[in-house]
Amino acid sequence: METTLVLIKPSGVQRGLIGEVISRFERKGLTIVGMKLRQLDSRILREHYAHLVDRPFFPSLERSMTATPVVCLALRGVDAVGVVRQMTGATNSRLAQPGTIRGDLGMSGQENIVHASDSPENAAIEVARFFGDGEIFDYTPCTLPAIYDPEEAAS
Ligand code: IDP
Ligand code: MG
Image (cartoon, rainbow, N blue to C red; front, side, top):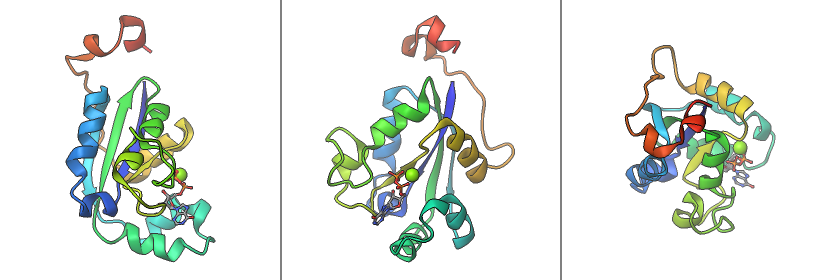
């Protein structure tokens, strides 16, 4: 199974969408193996958004991402990285498909409710960036046989 990182951004926190977003992942059948609030700062954002630091909108993105604490989630499941990216939708919420978190709940490119890791390699790096030792919990939900067939559950 894969473990992926989701951040419920200040746009989601401010708008009271924490429960809605977590509920979607729970209902899908993903296991929450890490969850906490964290106040981000410039140092971690420059690392997390290293690919965007030189873009003109970066100061605005940094202000937005530090406006409130974010909710950090580590979600586990078969192909969890791709499944969660699909559930997240396109970066610009106005273009994101209905049925996705951004498509259903947002109207903005920047204020787009959630972050989700974009590859298994980045997911491993990002889970380690946002969670410390002892903050990821390895457990098997008793519902697993109703979520996966035995072969899937062992993958
Ligand atoms: P992603 O979140 O869909 O993976 P990235 O390109 O990695 O998209 O960008 C990270 C975040 O930076 C976006 O989720 C969004 O909040 C912000 N962002 C990206 N492009 C723009 C832009 O053109 N204007 C304003 N904010 C942007
Ligand atoms: Mg990205």
